[in-house]
Length: 361
Image (cartoon, rainbow, N blue to C red; front, side, top):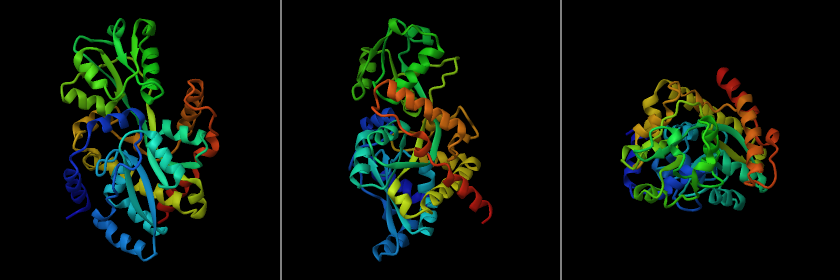
């Protein structure tokens, strides 16, 4: 039985996932502390590695991710993990992989990083900047999505963006949804003074269903899920909204210093997974889907670029410019109290080395 099938069987066995946790993860781009159990031993590729770890041959590399056990949201990291490629590359440099699921928001993942309960995390860039600003010493070594998409779920009577004026829209303050919403307003030349903003999250769906809200700014794959289930529809806009964010792979800086090959090994795994995703989209979507978020919802979220080029782990100059701008946005909105040194926070050398080593292997 192959690894992908084993993992999907495990996902079905953990079908009692709370959708509220998924929704909160979609808003914040991260997860909550201690809500999951590692499924390391359930992957055939990990059995030998786990035994080796017990014998002291390999160190356990603990990665925090949002979601619930068996339903983690790691973007390209899902394929790298499900396929065993991440395990394979990290075995080569002395580690076995353990993914720990966190069910709700970014503060818990950041707390786990601060306490040393995890060694790394795959999550959205907002909580990553927050943790770095608060003094948690991590380094971003790669991306798992450079263009995470968002959307507005609306009631049936909203036909175009202009119809939102005079209405109520749920926009959770201090989140990626707020960042996207501001870009959406600007792109569509809306008068925000004519729109009532509701700062809500856990009760957002009920507000939509009762008519107490007319729209909800949310992660695109969750927006697509809402449309599938009849909660609302995704509002289409002809305007180009440059409001995407990123998913990153961050590692505790002291661990990277202990083993200089670790960052390169992570990038090798992600590069190989990206090349695999580019040629086999179905496998990528199979790795992403969960008991709540369907393959169709993920395809809708990813449909803006059918090549899946945004899944490349490379931290490009354009992405670094985005991070500089985001740094200023977060500071100006008092989401972070100290600006982050972007140049030292994002290390592009690991990708370059991994690309070179794979080319010459």
